[in-house]
Amino acid sequence: MGVYFSMKLRSALEVVIDLRLAKKLPPLSLEIIIQSIMMEAMEKYNWSELLTPESLPFKTTYFKILQTHISYVLITDSLVYKIKKPVNFGFLDFTTLEKRKFFCEREVELNKRLCGDLYLGVVSIVKKGERYYLEGEGEPVEYAVKMKRLPEEGMMQRLLSEGKFTKAHLDLLVDTLVPFYQRAETGERVNYYGSLEVVKFNIEENFQQTAPFVGKALTERKYNHIKNYAFTFMEKRAELFEERIKGGFIRDGHGDLYSANICFDDLKRVYVFDCIEFNERFRCGDVASDLAFLAMDLDFYRLRELSQYFIERYVEKSGDIALLEVLDFYKCYRAYVRGKIGCFTFADERVPEKERQEALLQAQKYFDLAFFYSQGLPKVAIFMGLSGTGKSFLAQKFLEKIPAIYISSDITRKQILGLSPEEHHYAEFEKGIYAPEITERTYKAMLERALEEISYGRDVVLDATFRERRYQELFHRELISRGIEPYWVLCTAPDEVVRERMQKRLKEKTASDALFDIYLAQKARFEPPTEGKILSLDTSQPLSFLLETLFQFLDF
Image (cartoon, rainbow, N blue to C red; front, side, top):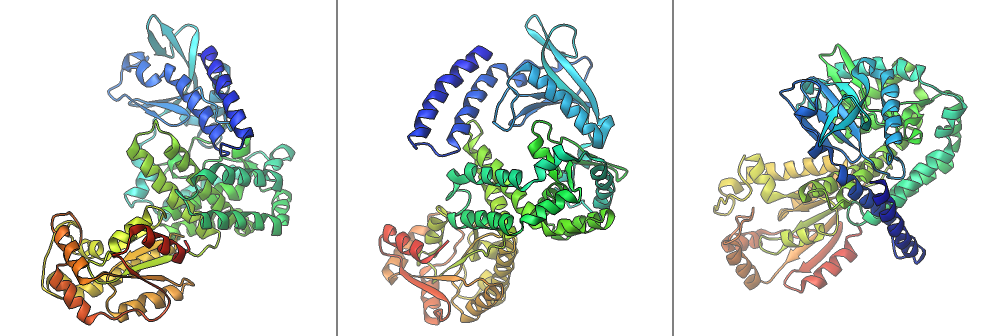
């Protein structure tokens, strides 16, 4: 496999270097191509296919192999084995058996600091005939980290998803982390990783690697804003990084402190596992950076109260009140890194399409959170107009180019009533599910959702008739009070065009129930907007013209 890899990598690198010199490849292309070559070589040694229950030195009723981008994880009734993939991503290099053994041993050594009895050691994988065996006798062909299996019901991500995570869990975690960081190695070697030089390198690396995803995972406006915030902070607050070093707050820490790597055993004990063993630059640094990761993770789950509680309890127990001055900076950094990882998954064509799209959506959410930490103000576009005037169609076309949250009155109305969005409920004007009191509930629910989303840095696209000025004024007032002036896109169309659209829509699955008589009733009582940024569009015009006009108006 080594010869195969060397030949493939050398020939590909020659092409890549030529293209990079000719400025025909973006910065991330080299890493993606190297990753692709590594993965191709790695697939010739696929442990998902080579290991079976018979490969184990014991009987098990449960046997499953999972994959991450850097390892295979074999799960049994009571034990877990982790095998490193022979990959090189630049920031880690597992390409030789010797390196994989070294980093397996390093993983066990480092993780014993927080959960010693969880990590049982490093074991060999041997080949006998055509079969492979874990912990067998003979010449090792691979190595694995051997661990106890943690209780699934105690995994922090599961507790979060089930709404069972409490302040008591955080108390236990803080009581574990405070002495850990106080004991963790510091000194000249470690302090280097908290220097402005290294922090700046990490930040620059992030922006270089995510540049190809601008326009897909985040807008250029947000990319530039976050970048400007990060470099301005480092320039104007440079003394903070030196003060953190002098204060002894740069430690050989965990590096990957978030919910996926934390497990609770009935509030008796917490396991903080899977620290970064492969790169000191990612593991060593300001304690505030580690803590910011978990605080950001709780924010990501929309648990701000718990996020704040976690930091407050840590500061109270540790006395490190100065970390508050760099907390948002490191939260921004951590959120951006998670967005970057989502982009890498999205860019990998070997990943199933559904998972790729989910990764992209997650990346967008993380980048928006980074934007929030960087004190950015989101944008809100409100597509309004009578039923059948094309506001939903135009909003969807806009969203194909701009990552934003879509909030529709048609969908919201049916959600609050427990109805399927595609289930039609035709009714007379202002009757049935379109009665005024239900319409009021709908607009209030839309506003509540919009305000929550912008509070996490997300751009929002709203889609509703807004035919009554009182709703226009309500949204305008609430958004302006938060420093956001909404963009109003008033969609119109000739009556005959609307009639034709509604006839066609009867045969389609849509959330809208409006018929032509409803359109005429709305038209008789429609109150056009009078304040704010307003663009009026006749949607019977060519789509290319509409989109060009729309993008000039909506400065997202």
